[in-house]
Length: 280
Image (cartoon, rainbow, N blue to C red; front, side):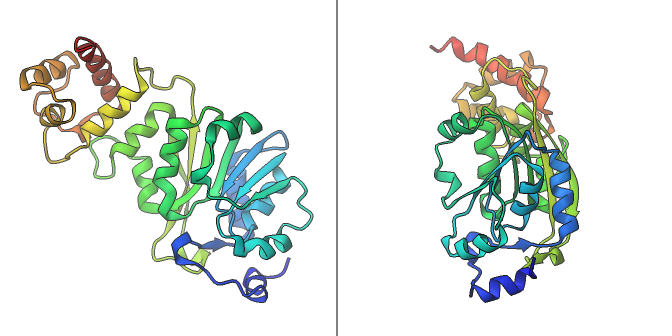
């Protein structure tokens, strides 16, 4: 296939900053991303932000069916050329954030997400799959390196935060490849990394998933404050009740949220569940 820059120039395509468009064309990099996803001819793949279709084309060679979402309709003629002959690809010109995920999952069944995500939607998109996705098996996504570090961080480290603990409820995350900014066109200001997030059934059993998510938000409400203070402010508990909850959950009274592992947050969530039942 012709050089990507040549194809984009021939179709007079202009990059749009608001869509976070940074394309990759290195064949070895694309193949390594698809290999890490472990998709095969029995797999259904969802790609979000397919751009010029370079990753889409490699996915089509390995997967059974690819649903490629793209928000920028100006890429239509480019994709018509780069995906010529890819009969198992359906390009959907739509903002994925506006898709009814429940209905879409009913239509396509189990699937894997493989994507070079626009940076501005990375965390909201991952959170959406964590909170709403019922048939997603894994996410193999290119993200900013600093975001990748947050996704995979250990408790009590600077990168550990609410999104780390949110992922841990349903999935395990690991960085599988670091990608320098020089691999993209146009070149972004920061390096990237490919993260694989594998969903696991009942990975972190809790009495109430929504309350676990609320507990996580509470824990990281104000990193400089103790967990006791955050419990008082977030759940409107008296200081005495907050202290009793921490004691039951085996959490030190002066602990801060970022010191608690996801397992400790799950235990705290279950204690809160029993405590808050009394208020109903």
